[in-house]
Image (cartoon, rainbow, N blue to C red):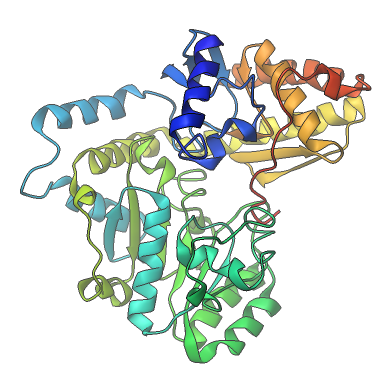
Length: 433
């Protein structure tokens, strides 16, 4: 791993924080042994800079590569677009095709705006809600990105995001003047949602939630989200950045009969790794984009819409959502079974296609040792598994066989710290645990 480690050391000099995405930071795995950088990828396999090949049973491009790495059909569409030109003084027609396709998949939606990343798409959604209502306060549940509107929840109380993101996250850099403009509520807690809405009713701009994360929403919660938004005449925004395309070719909220948001936000899997995000919504809310300045040069390039159209087409033809759920279910059941086999106390959670487990004791050390043992067996693996269509059930069995070996070693090693080659894992996202 000489090239991977030396590249990481160079990154520490030239890139503050080492990586652009916190979830890919080597400290979130086991710094010193996690390869960190790839040279190529195909299907479910990744090669590091030193030429080592791994079966990726970890975060799958942090959920972006829903079909698999270097998908031939998506890449072919993108390469064709590249050869024809991706940015000119005119707009690409594919963005109109994609907008129409997303509205067809979500019959409640009428208009669409595009960005290139999930965080900025969420910022656009919140801007639209505030422009529509001419108010400021946002009530939210779950994780919704790095922008000021979200981090401002921790200005008055640095524990506000503890059950939604990372415990004790510093809001340093977010204007202190935003204090009191964003308030979290617990998932499935209708009483807290309704209390906060009544408390801030004179300045309430939006209600934001993830559709699903560690457990499913209750019917009462879904009903309260919609009725509370209607009562105070504010947009209900559903963040589908993680959940979208995991259960079906569209949003996870479509699996809840009769439930309709005013805005839904997509990214990650929408382009199978290519940069594209979408804010879809009802016309009465989306029209706010005409009088609020929301504009960016790179939102007009061609690659993102082309990749999204190809991804949606293949995803629908394959009925990929069913396979992703089945793969994730098999992995979660395997974790639980193997933990019982070796008497390990673990917590298994997350939605089926994007699951995770955690050791209840000595988590950072045991996770680092698990990563180390899995790398030795040829797997990129940590406490999370994000399913890709490219994964096979045979690969899941191979992964669980390797997990069996790792769990056995963890259960039978008294001084795990002495076995570590890398450093213990730094804790990551809580995500409404």
